[in-house]
Length: 114
Length: 112
Image 1 (cartoon, helix red, strand yellow):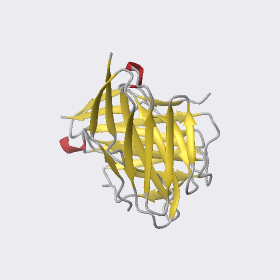
Image 2 (cartoon, chains in turn red, blue; image 1 turned 45 degrees about the vertical axis):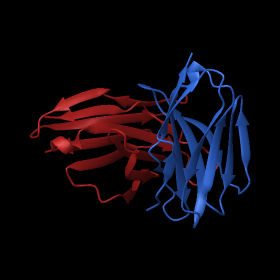
Image 3 (tube, helix red, strand yellow; image 1 turned 90 degrees about the horizontal axis):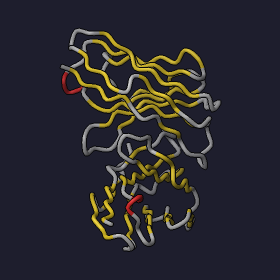
């Protein structure tokens, strides 16, 4: 199974809502990533988890809160978002410390903040 | 943070044409260079992962080269087919951060 599954595929939320994005993989990868992509821009790294510990936070606002409850799951908790946070959120996973290996991506969650 | 640049931004070619794209990246602290193919409404899929200067990799009609000293990689598609239509992303990884930094991609459309 080389799939990274993201749910939901689409999400519309108000600025006062709390919601969560979920990402799951069963490839035994111990590095998991959240990326944010806005239209016609490159995917931008938000967070990296390595062995279920947060290893990189790219100065992301605290209204985005990541969580890695186990080696297969990665969540992104959203609270009090702004309309400019509307974007495609991509999850990825890879083995740790193996530069010759590819990352596997989910299809993304298309988030709209109204 | 790395700055990865891709050109051209978009490309329209006829079926059967050969084409190539460029990815440039900072050469210092280089660790790896990835190429991904991303079709609309699907997940990005890896084409190549390259780590060594002078590397050349091939998968069917698609090939890639890597120059880590000058910081560039080329992706070639020979005899483009309509099913090659997608966005092609390159991403670089350095020894410090060890996470992928992406370029904006080259959007390829192949007309039958």
